[in-house]
Length: 615
Image (cartoon, rainbow, N blue to C red; front, side):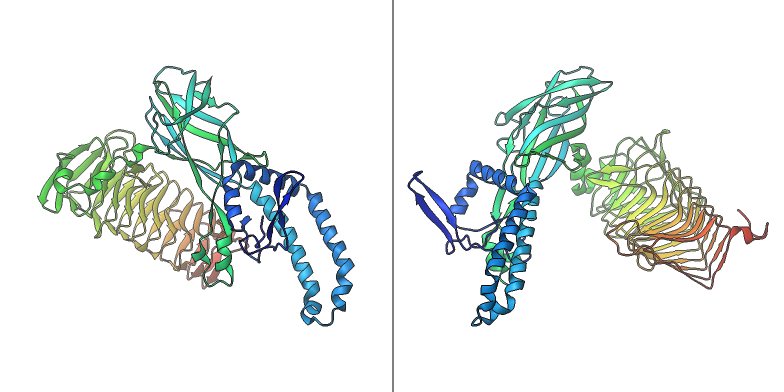
């Protein structure tokens, strides 16, 4: 299977056997692959091309090959025969004094080929045994096709669909006895008369959830091979030539339709089980990705005109051809609104936006929301349940929020984007001043991704998780107060910015968390008090920590490696700081090192009572 001598010029011979009236293939002087050529099907000639198109032949060949490589006794016998042969002819090699090369390299060559035999045996066994199966589940019409499942299979062997298990919620009050499973035979992605029926999925009731399992019989899915792209191997020794002789498997995709008979069913989970038809082993399908068409509702509104955008809600006032204005007063937002790109949204002082549960406002244009001390701007929920988010995505200019108060927000998925912060800025620079974030119920009160941000003179209190989460951001967090937030006060991932003059008190996890290779962020002159961890540094992050007061935490400084893709853990450098009254002052794992210079590190038991306040 791995011989390089299978093209039209090498060593594949046909012999007509008169006893059976058929041709036999006689491979002679076959070669093993060069180092690094880890591909299963090698050889390119018209015969190989046609054999690969014969599915039955390919399956039988692979099954016979599997029977051979799955028995370790075979490689043991092969190597013994190889060693015995060499021991009988070795003397003759050394006696050949006219061939210096043979005399000088014979042992090394014999050992190299022997090692390749072992590797090829194992590689063929792995190739036949490994199949990757991934799936995407799209939730559809509850009463027609409640789910479409796209399965992508990559491997050298055919697989058989063995079972399907669905967990659903009965949304219509009628208990169906079965569902129908179809395959998208005509590959048009739509359930229609051109598709093939595979079987019934019988139901078993368990409380409010129903499980459907298919019959054991299922369709066979064969691999698809193409010659390797020669361009990938240009100027790499002789690999550009060999690439013409190598086949690699391509993803084979199947769409399956779960079809109901008019009952309203919402699919909660789908599990497909396949069987490797060569080895007989069950294939573990990767965790499916679930997609709902509802996730992309509003996507087309990104390109609305200003007039179309203004028609979404009466609060929008068209001030110019490029400016939408929300005037002062109380405005109720019942559903998610989208401000298209190419405009500017101005929210005037004294504006109050009251959101229905899960309703959001997403702007693809910069937002200017400047309130005043006497007339702040409020974003809050109309009910006890949290609303969604106020988000800015790919705005061309910096957005500004001044004297803006955010209360009881959450998270949202709008037009295909996921927003984790009550105020979220994705690929959009943002300035936040004199603002307040409280009782957020999502992952973050404020989240910024891939942008520059300055957050200053603001208050973050009683949010359920992180107060500020910055992902691959730059800028500064200055002169803010963080009080009793449920998770981290400040969470940095891959970010380089200045954190200065902040007071962080009683965060449920970290006062400040620094990860994902954040390069040299500066943590300067902050008070970090009463958190589980004062400052945590992980995953090749290198913060400069200066002039900070880190007190009354469970752990003052914690450094470790969280993700194995990073060589190092945390590498913080600490100067002129106070670490007092923490239950544990400094903790490093084996991948981390905290460097402390010119600082006061005193165990809690050595601090005189009353010397330091608890705030």
